[in-house]
Length: 349
Image (cartoon, rainbow, N blue to C red; front, side):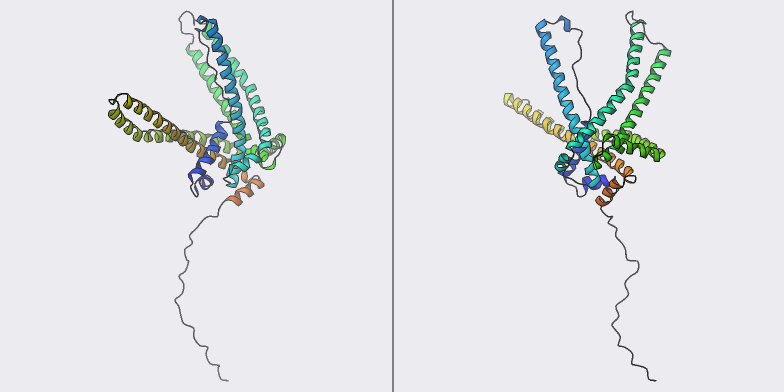
């Protein structure tokens, strides 16, 4: 917590705060491949062929654009994760030089993340196939078309057990990703090691202190859930409170202009659009501020855990940590001033 406060708020400058928060936010939010393709509609077969062809072409184009944007965000997020690591480790606040520094290492980190993603898909594939087959068997073969309820109490219990197992698997995979991100990425970033060397360092840490690593992962997951919920609640409360002043202004403008004819209506719409854009920018800043601060804290938490086991990182943390400013009180009051006394005359033999 102290390093996060020192990095983002001592001294507090709004530009620096938002810059570090944005780096942390987009480092994590841009780390996945997210694309949305419009869903299938049962009424598409009733449309004219030309319009149907246009809809299909538009859906394909939208999917390709979403894929390209997702790939760009994935690359930017992966590179910003390396940048954020050194920002927190060194309390350096200039992003541009670090962005240039980690250009070549980003591809290695992307390769490691894609390797993890492939392993996760292989692990999750049996659960996905089993869930699809179970739903098809019990939804289509047990009265889905006759109006009967396809699931009995036993089936619901099986579904719940399956959901619990899936949640456990997701938590285990999340813990594995945290291990790689928190305890292997610093080796790749700070020493420019290969993927195999970084994973070997991670295995050495796991073999040396398995209990400490398990405790770290447990606290990391629990704190992530608790602080994440708290941050989301804080964002909602701040946005709701910040809606009060523009809401009052909007009501006043409505009563003042909605009977003022066409000019009043146009002015009212323009004010609404302008106010909506301002509030949207404010909402983005609030989300980035809270979530970015939280993600920066977790990065500092991971680095401090690894710093005692990684001398290079520990040295960076020590050299970039300012000394504490203690106010030492005088242990004893100074003695009162006394004028100098003349030397005594020599004694006579």
